[in-house]
Image (cartoon, rainbow, N blue to C red; front, side, top):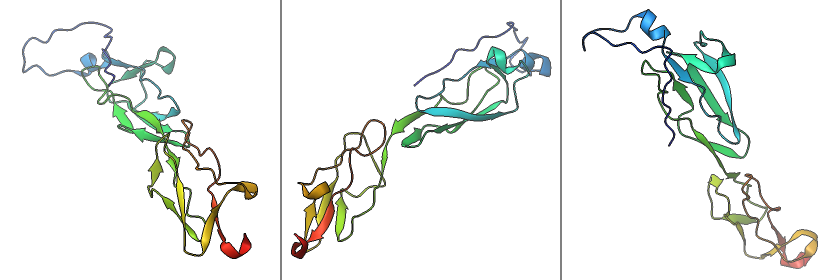
Length: 165
Protein backbone atom coordinates (compact mmCIF):
# COMPACT_ATOMS: atom_id res chain seq x y z
CA UNK A 1 0.00 0.00 0.00
CA UNK A 2 1.13 3.53 -0.69
CA UNK A 3 0.63 6.41 1.69
CA UNK A 4 1.57 9.96 0.91
CA UNK A 5 3.08 12.41 3.33
CA UNK A 6 1.65 15.87 2.79
CA UNK A 7 3.77 18.88 2.01
CA UNK A 8 2.24 21.87 3.70
CA UNK A 9 2.89 25.35 2.41
CA UNK A 10 3.09 26.52 6.00
CA UNK A 11 2.88 24.88 9.40
CA UNK A 12 0.13 26.11 11.69
CA UNK A 13 -0.49 25.06 15.25
CA UNK A 14 -3.99 25.02 16.62
CA UNK A 15 -4.33 26.75 19.98
CA UNK A 16 -6.46 23.96 21.44
CA UNK A 17 -8.01 20.62 20.43
CA UNK A 18 -11.40 22.31 20.15
CA UNK A 19 -10.06 24.86 17.62
CA UNK A 20 -11.65 24.42 14.20
CA UNK A 21 -9.81 24.77 10.92
CA UNK A 22 -10.75 27.91 9.06
CA UNK A 23 -10.87 28.34 5.30
CA UNK A 24 -7.50 30.07 5.57
CA UNK A 25 -6.04 26.99 7.25
CA UNK A 26 -7.64 24.60 4.76
CA UNK A 27 -6.40 26.61 1.79
CA UNK A 28 -2.80 26.05 2.91
CA UNK A 29 -3.23 22.26 3.00
CA UNK A 30 -2.53 20.38 -0.21
CA UNK A 31 -2.35 16.76 -1.32
CA UNK A 32 0.36 15.65 -3.74
CA UNK A 33 -0.37 14.26 -7.19
CA UNK A 34 -1.52 10.64 -6.66
CA UNK A 35 0.36 7.91 -8.49
CA UNK A 36 -1.23 6.96 -11.80
CA UNK A 37 -1.67 3.17 -11.86
CA UNK A 38 0.37 1.18 -14.36
CA UNK A 39 -2.09 0.27 -17.15
CA UNK A 40 -4.49 2.85 -15.75
CA UNK A 41 -5.33 6.52 -15.88
CA UNK A 42 -6.84 9.40 -13.98
CA UNK A 43 -10.23 10.02 -15.56
CA UNK A 44 -10.88 13.35 -13.99
CA UNK A 45 -10.98 15.54 -10.98
CA UNK A 46 -13.67 17.59 -9.33
CA UNK A 47 -13.22 20.38 -6.83
CA UNK A 48 -10.24 21.40 -8.93
CA UNK A 49 -7.18 22.43 -7.03
CA UNK A 50 -6.83 26.13 -6.48
CA UNK A 51 -3.07 25.89 -6.99
CA UNK A 52 -3.17 25.04 -10.69
CA UNK A 53 -2.51 21.61 -12.07
CA UNK A 54 1.02 22.48 -13.22
CA UNK A 55 2.36 22.13 -9.66
CA UNK A 56 0.48 18.80 -9.18
CA UNK A 57 -1.11 19.81 -5.89
CA UNK A 58 -4.73 19.34 -4.96
CA UNK A 59 -6.83 21.37 -2.54
CA UNK A 60 -8.80 19.86 0.33
CA UNK A 61 -11.96 18.27 -1.06
CA UNK A 62 -10.54 17.56 -4.54
CA UNK A 63 -11.81 14.26 -5.93
CA UNK A 64 -9.67 12.14 -8.28
CA UNK A 65 -11.20 9.23 -10.22
CA UNK A 66 -9.21 6.32 -11.71
CA UNK A 67 -9.86 3.61 -14.29
CA UNK A 68 -7.87 0.88 -16.03
CA UNK A 69 -7.14 0.08 -19.65
CA UNK A 70 -8.91 -2.83 -21.32
CA UNK A 71 -7.77 -6.20 -20.02
CA UNK A 72 -7.15 -4.84 -16.52
CA UNK A 73 -9.26 -4.74 -13.38
CA UNK A 74 -9.18 -1.84 -10.90
CA UNK A 75 -8.21 -3.03 -7.41
CA UNK A 76 -8.85 -0.50 -4.65
CA UNK A 77 -10.92 2.67 -4.51
CA UNK A 78 -11.99 4.11 -7.87
CA UNK A 79 -12.16 7.63 -6.35
CA UNK A 80 -10.09 9.28 -3.65
CA UNK A 81 -10.51 12.65 -1.90
CA UNK A 82 -7.91 15.10 -0.58
CA UNK A 83 -8.57 15.37 3.17
CA UNK A 84 -7.92 18.11 5.73
CA UNK A 85 -4.82 16.20 6.87
CA UNK A 86 -3.10 16.59 3.49
CA UNK A 87 -3.43 12.85 2.88
CA UNK A 88 -5.62 11.17 0.28
CA UNK A 89 -8.64 9.35 1.72
CA UNK A 90 -7.30 6.05 0.35
CA UNK A 91 -4.11 4.89 -1.36
CA UNK A 92 -4.32 5.03 -5.16
CA UNK A 93 -5.66 1.82 -6.72
CA UNK A 94 -3.71 -0.47 -9.01
CA UNK A 95 -4.68 -2.22 -12.22
CA UNK A 96 -4.41 -6.00 -12.33
CA UNK A 97 -4.23 -7.78 -15.68
CA UNK A 98 -7.13 -10.15 -16.24
CA UNK A 99 -8.44 -11.97 -19.26
CA UNK A 100 -12.19 -11.97 -19.98
CA UNK A 101 -14.29 -15.10 -20.23
CA UNK A 102 -13.92 -16.02 -23.92
CA UNK A 103 -17.24 -17.83 -24.29
CA UNK A 104 -17.94 -21.51 -24.83
CA UNK A 105 -17.20 -22.96 -28.26
CA UNK A 106 -20.14 -24.57 -30.10
CA UNK A 107 -20.77 -28.06 -28.66
CA UNK A 108 -18.30 -27.51 -25.84
CA UNK A 109 -17.70 -25.93 -22.46
CA UNK A 110 -14.79 -23.88 -21.10
CA UNK A 111 -13.15 -25.06 -17.89
CA UNK A 112 -12.59 -23.61 -15.42
CA UNK A 113 -15.59 -21.31 -15.68
CA UNK A 114 -14.86 -17.82 -14.30
CA UNK A 115 -15.79 -14.22 -15.07
CA UNK A 116 -12.12 -13.21 -15.26
CA UNK A 117 -8.87 -15.17 -15.47
CA UNK A 118 -5.51 -14.26 -13.96
CA UNK A 119 -2.27 -14.19 -15.97
CA UNK A 120 -0.92 -17.72 -16.20
CA UNK A 121 -4.37 -19.38 -16.11
CA UNK A 122 -4.99 -21.96 -18.83
CA UNK A 123 -8.31 -22.91 -20.44
CA UNK A 124 -9.49 -26.39 -21.22
CA UNK A 125 -12.37 -27.25 -23.56
CA UNK A 126 -14.66 -30.13 -22.66
CA UNK A 127 -16.59 -31.27 -25.73
CA UNK A 128 -20.09 -32.73 -25.58
CA UNK A 129 -20.58 -36.44 -26.37
CA UNK A 130 -20.04 -37.13 -30.06
CA UNK A 131 -17.58 -34.22 -30.42
CA UNK A 132 -13.83 -33.97 -30.07
CA UNK A 133 -11.51 -31.02 -29.37
CA UNK A 134 -9.91 -29.71 -32.56
CA UNK A 135 -7.08 -27.18 -32.90
CA UNK A 136 -6.45 -24.46 -35.46
CA UNK A 137 -5.78 -25.77 -39.02
CA UNK A 138 -6.64 -29.31 -37.94
CA UNK A 139 -3.61 -29.59 -35.66
CA UNK A 140 -3.61 -30.68 -32.05
CA UNK A 141 -5.43 -28.25 -29.79
CA UNK A 142 -3.37 -25.80 -27.75
CA UNK A 143 -4.62 -24.63 -24.39
CA UNK A 144 -5.01 -20.83 -24.42
CA UNK A 145 -3.13 -19.07 -21.60
CA UNK A 146 -4.01 -15.70 -20.05
CA UNK A 147 -1.04 -13.40 -20.74
CA UNK A 148 0.37 -10.67 -18.45
CA UNK A 149 -1.15 -8.12 -20.87
CA UNK A 150 -4.68 -9.39 -20.16
CA UNK A 151 -5.38 -11.21 -23.42
CA UNK A 152 -5.41 -14.85 -24.52
CA UNK A 153 -2.33 -16.50 -26.09
CA UNK A 154 -4.48 -18.08 -28.79
CA UNK A 155 -7.99 -18.98 -29.86
CA UNK A 156 -10.26 -21.33 -27.93
CA UNK A 157 -10.12 -24.86 -29.42
CA UNK A 158 -13.27 -25.88 -31.24
CA UNK A 159 -15.34 -29.03 -30.86
CA UNK A 160 -15.90 -30.98 -34.07
CA UNK A 161 -18.19 -33.89 -34.71
CA UNK A 162 -16.49 -37.29 -34.93
CA UNK A 163 -18.16 -37.57 -38.34
CA UNK A 164 -16.27 -34.48 -39.64
CA UNK A 165 -12.85 -35.80 -38.68
